[in-house]
Image 1 (cartoon, rainbow, N blue to C red):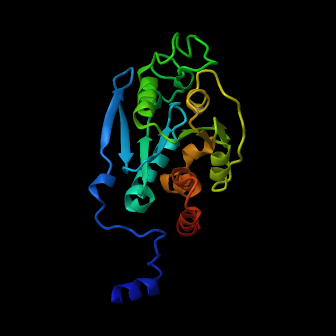
Image 2: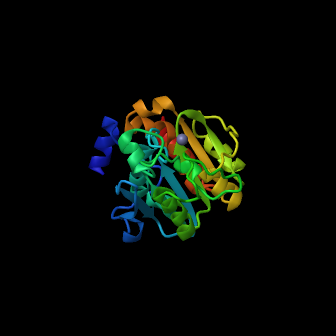
Length: 256
Ligand SMILES: [Zn+2]
């Protein structure tokens, strides 16, 4: 009690928006798992948090020169581990770097020059030197497809740059609108690109998917600034369609 009064007096104490559980249950802890290898044999890492039925898949940096989503996902992992109540009834699958070779070389495509976000099996698919001569020709795209098969996500968030908007495919208009309430990015329908993950998951499989297009300048923000601006979008997607009050608590305590 004395400590509480002292912290409150000095301004160091801030009530948390969700009860913080000391000693996170083992089932909520995430083990980093290598789920595949890139063309240049870099590990592709996946983290799974929670054991609930409602599943959200969040992936970043499928385009290697759009890296801002990766620290955002890393911050999300820490937040979920700190506030595991968000994971009750939920499971969150994180792919922080979907294109590790592209990230290492600071380029959009993978090491074979293929745009992974054009490499999926879709009705509008075009075979070409940059989209691959067949669907899922690239190991990195196969990892994503395998995760979708394995976890059957209820919704997907794919983080890109630099178009500064929230795009969506499939039955995700309401999800996109909800997420847009928690950042300064407008909802924009950019259209289903041939062979894209949005076309595959959203249109072919009917899984709501949003493309969180961060602005280009997001790459220059530090992790904390990124989290303050866009963390609530990811939380909103995870708890969708529930728990607006939790999100409001998040905004009140973390974003102001
Ligand atoms: Zn992109």
